Image (tube, rainbow, N blue to C red; front, side):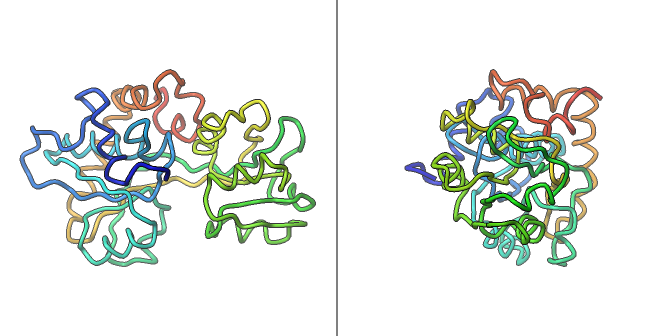
Length: 264
């Protein structure tokens, strides 16, 4: 994560307009302690701000009279803390996470889609499905099970420790293709000045809607939060929030966000 601490990343949200600030003074009830493991722009907190996930969760929580205290934690540790009731919520996670962790309760409205795509030189590879990569030297982030399962038969499959190292690996021609989540991959290409060398190839290999999960003791808040997320989508307020998160980049540049927060 570079030189910034996790808490420093979260404090960077104060650089955004007051409408997006966390821990709103107008929220009367105790703050919701929400964890995220996603630390890459535009989905997670970074030097550029809180990211889409937490900004949208904050807006929905504010509408039901709750503020948010956010923490950036490793994925497994976050799940353990929320499952034990130490913290209140975690995300973004796939829909079935409550089947693996019975003490979690899903907020039944997706916040965004994870789109798993192949990153390679533009026009270098025709993509139809996972089998399109069978003859390629492929790199993925270690521990992403959906990628490990579906790419096991690739000619060469390398598991890299972090997303940053994954794209460094691709830039040094140590792999022909990197498979990663599209929105965060676009952000990494931009940060590293690689947008002319590599692009997300279409169509996506898989699309998974992603959700906020609460500890079961707070399960009564799941439907009110879902109602507010739907309202933010219908009203266009969510799209306005994302415009602040994305800055000069249009929402349409990030299909995993636009599919949920574009024109209704």
